[in-house]
Length: 487
Image (tube, rainbow, N blue to C red; front, side):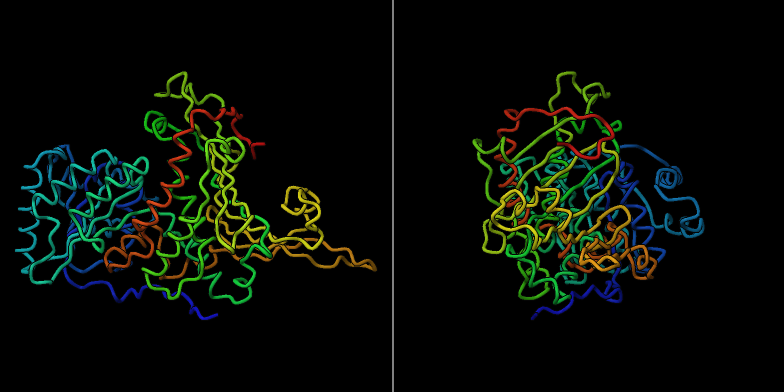
């Protein structure tokens, strides 16, 4: 193997210059659940610059103390997770600007607030903007940020300007291209950080390390040895009050076009020539670009969509809604490595268990090519005799391998055993970061390797959009809540 183990960013490489973090939608659900707890975690771990400020953008009016109390009361942190003294000192760095996102006056006032902080610090600071808002607001915010010259880094080179954008990146190929064109017009590519938080999960990052740092596995990462790959993202929850939003999205756009295809890319990508950010992102994009398009004729054969029983009685859901809460796709990749190897992509809500995992099935010596059903892993007797490598993404993150050993006694019969590794045994490490902690950390140091590139986003939409265009023609399978699997 020519590749070296993947090197993680050095915490000491964090910039020392002052940084202003501007959060659009700071009182929203995403900021409360993910962004602010991550910032607090980095603050407690001393992974933020010593001089930093958080400016929240909100449509509501507060006094300074009301604003900080509102942030404190809505921030999702477990009791006892952080010291109250640390939380208080953290919130001392917060201020806010009130206004409507489409009002140019808001951005004029924001520019003044940023300049005031810079003047207090005596230098031009880094600026990191985060759009914690619905995608329908992206265009107006981005245009106004640029219109107020807030997208321009410090003239003397003392500080950078970067922008964090959450998925979904568009609604189909056309809208994704439109958003990308706008971003490219207003910002340089090195300023743009597109978040798919799955890429920042330790368990997902470790797929590359597992493949390329262990010489025993990568030579087997080939159609000659791998029978099939099953990627599944099951949720126990229903739409839970998000009905009106979810009904306009559906499972395929909610998690398929992004999270599941991101996992596929890590499994299917070729070994990069180096482990710098551009090489890794390039190989992920190439893997997605090699997905074989599914035509209208083959759609019923390779795609299934479903809806849990009672979905159209949820608040905010039309009684005649055919929005899918489940999908299953049999994907194929056009490459010598993966010829004739099916990738099963599956996700659904209201399942018996919440879990995200990737199963890599290796061909069994007991399943000969003459029996097509057995050889492709559909025969239960064949599956029972296959080695299976499982990447458990969540919960109980880990890696396990099913292998076979001889049973005690005189016969040569074998039985399956499991070799397991649990991330819980290592996540107590002082350098361990949560997914949003890692994303913010990497945005500070300018490392884009865990952020989606334009090529990856466009490749994923090119694969998904033709399916969505014929989506309504596919029969909708109704399934009961609490199922383990769907036939």
